[in-house]
Image (cartoon, rainbow, N blue to C red; front, side):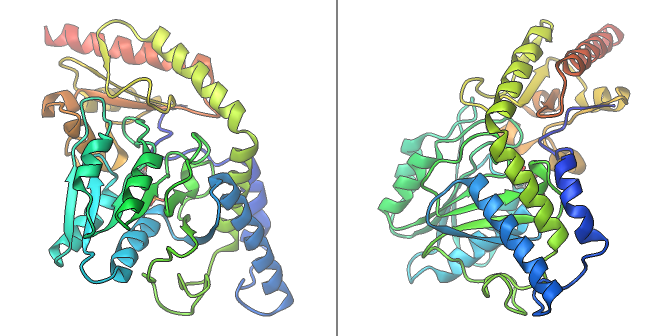
Length: 372
Ligand code: PLP
């Protein structure tokens, strides 16, 4: 199988898997217990916390582990709104955000919050002027992701954070697809990340929190994570995430150069008739989202059983609905359903990628012959 679905999840790094093993088997103490073993587990979690914080690379903040990035995003949005002063009851976000942001905003809107959801242009980019025009003193939070999970577009997060601060709002950046792939700029107050998108384990995420921007807790209970997020932490998951984050920091330039080579090879291998969805420059190049007129992308995916790639986003594929991001950049339903997403990275070989693209190209052409 050739795995080309790096935006859905990434292969667990052997180093992360190795680091987790003792904590899965023998070292089972509760990290919040005062026993010697418990303190050893707590110390391992603190090392992991530092490793994830360093991979994020922002100054003056703390990091709390969560059960997923989805939880971190829910917490950041709901907890910020909860803490906002009187008259601050509005969130500004963007149509191409992940469902974790959009559905949370929609739910809050049902409870009376104001939500302004800005459009993107046909390249997938947000106009900084449009953000500026949407901001006033009623805004509590601006939520904009750094790297889009469906089309890889990189948004001007630093400029947007500056604008948010000018009206006294906080800025949440969903950096799930950015960690280890592009540098996270200074500016955001809250940053959500996920273990499994950076060659770490699933079911662990984290929220980086700038000093003074702590959201009200979402999960109440035993007061873990300095009272910010209750629930017993999993040393295995934290340590695995930490090891993966360390690898991402240390191998950042190497991974980045590898992805650039893969992108160039992919474009060279792509036959005529394919159109790239989204801007190609302001983009993370480990994401190639392409369409072809008349293509039945769902059929292509099920026909090519030896390849793992995706239709828009994993979430959109599950629902059978066309991707909301592709619709947001102006594609018709039909064009969105003719689009596929190829995601590649650290463990993808150039030969595998080129072979996969040739198979995809051939299968698309045979669909066309069959339809003619
Ligand atoms: N945000 C983005 C951009 C994502 O791609 C994902 C995962 O698909 C998430 C948030 C949610 O991450 P998790 O799987 O850790 O809940």
